[in-house]
View 1 (tube, rainbow, N blue to C red):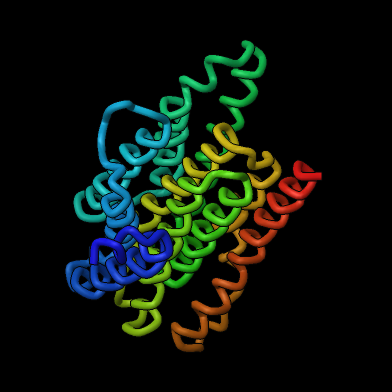
View 2: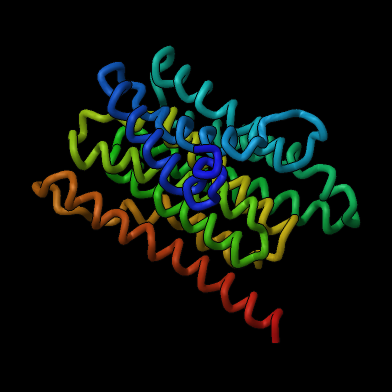
Length: 273
């Protein structure tokens, strides 16, 4: 059993998918089924033995920021009524968190590079989180966005030569896949909420930024990933069942995610030649 849990394939796919599916199935009557993304992702972090504060690396800061996301999400879902300002405010909050996460890396740059890269990371995280959070009341589109963004970030990170970030991203995508399957089975009664959309978007955006700064992911992959929560807004057949809408929305997401992976693949081939 210990060997099974230590298997990277289990850690980054089957386990987070199963945990997320169970969480979504158990908690959807309470309107917090969106905690599925957090449950699946942090199950992987636990199995990999990566909970801890020392040394406080950028990767561990991502985990800490990711732990804050579902807490804020549940508060927003249950204690406050989301407004138009909710999505950009949360986006700006995690954009600032990105600067905290990567400050030790950014401060090694020149003043001009620090300003340019810092502003770029802030804008990328703000955009990705804001567009994803605004899908909080559309579980099909939100689930598809989480699936595409997680898998796309994970695969791109692997191509960018970071196995750890790749595992994290793939686990996040698998967890969102578990949530999306619950939506396909139960229907739109499984609410995504801000707990789901904030969790997957904040973690994925920070992982993508880490793959850029700490590995070899080309910067052009980030705009492609940022399009995932935009493309899932393309038209869906309104009268079709949830499972068919989920498949179509996922294909939209994979267009952007696949583009990011293609960019990372071309860059990795160029580096090898």
